[in-house]
Image (cartoon, rainbow, N blue to C red; front, side, top):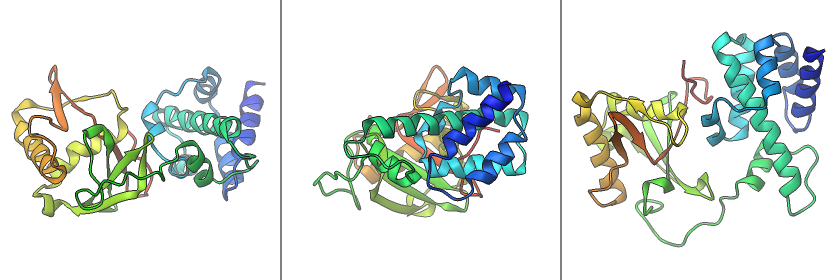
Length: 250
């Protein structure tokens, strides 16, 4: 009975959207509805909250990929979190839309209504934009283009595609080691941190120096910093794997 109920929930959620592949996705997930996944869906708790910083279309691509290959035991928390995030966003879209909401919106339309970021400040800045603190910055890295870093301004809590510029690692005098420092935050939530060896703090120093020079932020305010031997950042980091989907922590 619980399995049938969960399958009906999946059909209801993904049928809400204007997209290709939802029937294949539902079929693939339905075959893999373990007790673990069902219980997580019934609990209604998003156990991988870091996924909420990613666009809905990217979340769909991720769950489509992991269900197609077969969900591992560790990936149940990823799958259930994505399903619950998309369900919550759709409900918010339907209830908060000022205009008559479209019954079957695309992910792009839904996100544009939930997270409007087209109101751009008039201040001319470094390259394309300026920031006054690190919370206004999104750094995006993609394994498909490992030598490139994308910088976006956070507007209304979401990275803006209107305020964006690109830099190669070599232009910032950085390498793959410092890139790996950034990437780990791609699967951490805003208030999360990780243990990074203090004996390698020179790598973090180089990263901080490059970012402070680029954005002309006062030298005393570091984008990456330690608290109780754990590395933190106020920057929103999004990271994508070789498939173009959000990174997962295993």
